[in-house]
Image (cartoon, rainbow, N blue to C red; front, side, top):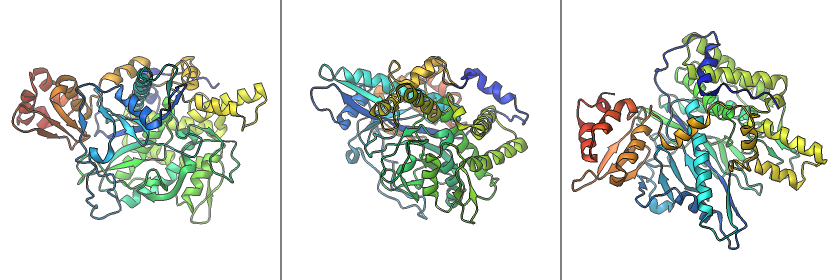
Length: 526
């Protein structure tokens, strides 16, 4: 194992301080991001058949309360396409259309059933470091819910959840990233600049897998579980003909100012470093895009084939064809972006969080350029590969041996006593960036610097009066003859600084609503 020294939560800022670039105000305009993870689920040992939909419903229901509230779908438009100008006003989704088991958590997150999987969507956060923290909190919430749901099965049955992306039988499920981006950025610029970035990032963002479910490909082990399932460069779908750049135009914010970049290429990483880079690198590149500061894009001749080839290449050095007739490797693509971001941060300054992401990105690429297997203990795929190779060497196993497939799956088991990644991490053999206390706090508390704080505190204080919740609005019973819809179109408002004093002094939802509507309210002035 590579040495897995961890700076801990306090070490994040200190590692950034070692660089020479100027540090800007940590309270610079906040960027909004979040993660959504669909978990693999199966039931073993049950004397009766329990299909994945029922099992997922049992897991999510384990977190529901008798007074639980509905999800507000009135602003959900999953078929609205960013390529439509003006956007096509598709009918909103309704609960009746979906029939999903759903709950909203006190930490501001959403936990629900989607496509026969339990899915956890983090609350909105403003840094990749917080994305790691609330994502890890989600893993523990889901694992605890699975343990509780197991008690409802006939004796002998167990519900298992895995943080992975394929069942090994031809089905894939997602781990999506979301970023709020200025609508002024042309969508074509997002496509041209982000496609090479996503195609080449499996070297740190992949969780690794044995083989492939697609015939005609000799792949003993590859970097990404998701890559082989992508078939199109650009498109609206997320489950069929999956595109590298998803065009869903559903901002969950003021659509005149913002769009939400919905990234569906990612693997469900457990490594703190990998999750940090999945989210943080994209955030840095988007910040440069908003300032029109990126160099000309790298045009790949066939991005889909390049994505597959990049995942199948454990060295990061395989040549990928460009439209101009030249070639470039995944590591070279990543260095293209990393060098541009580093120079940009040197010119304008970086927040401590940005500087830390940039430093860890450079570290990971430097190790990979020497020997990608040196990322063992730092990113998921390399840690899994080292584990599998120890089993192969000890027992003389070929790559297609069923025992290795079981090890591959058990790597992602969310039970701390059984999951191989979690067991390695508990022994200090995997680098950690956030400690148990911070993760456990995030299971109960929302992030303080986004509208998730208002959502979470509202649930904690006045859950009985909350009728429905969405990302950008809540509906409450204010005690009158009609319900009151409280819009939250700006994810950067409704923070602890904006509204905590109002909660402290409010005896009821009516008091809170009156305070929110006052011109003197920090929520109005923020």
